[in-house]
Length: 120
Image (cartoon, rainbow, N blue to C red; front, side, top):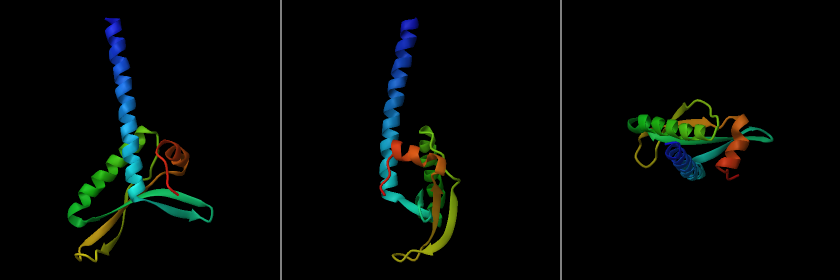
């Protein structure tokens, strides 16, 4: 019985590592596409994730941002709360959009760069 338990635990660890690799690659692609740098001071930049969503898709955008934050937690990367910024009128269709944003906290920037990567 103990051998079976060991094998199950071993398999779970392998699957957990595979999930972590997949999650890391997903985050890398998401941040490469949508990340931006916020200049906090002359020598300091913060990593942030921005997304613009129209009012009818705002809830979906917020849920997506929460899921990204949850994935980052898997890597012990701390983030700020999500906040909504001003409205913008989209040129192509005249719809009002809102900017949704969160940042990687300063104490997690090195971990983010090592685990996920960051294009400067």
